[in-house]
Length: 119
Image (tube, rainbow, N blue to C red; front, side, top):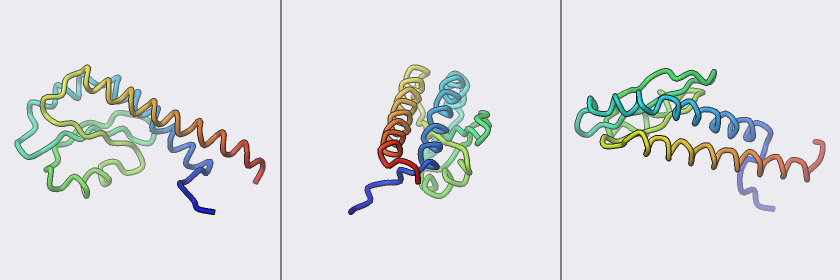
């Protein structure tokens, strides 16, 4: 049987963490947008929420370095990347979408784990 993803309790917990982090990003939407005008050309703004669900700030990252720097900044928390020109409504729309998708994943994993029964 093919494995089409991680449906472990740890994956469910990670999805729940991501949904909660989305709410933290949303709560800091104005701060994120206020930091965007200072982003240099060929850079993006990376906002970070740590594993304790605390907003830890924003960072300018060169677009060429996104693949390496975002996971480094994210650590065991969550990161979101924003481009100049984003407004508060867009930030909140993206964080709402992030939360919705993460919660759906957590719910799906719960259903799968329930069907599988005790390990």
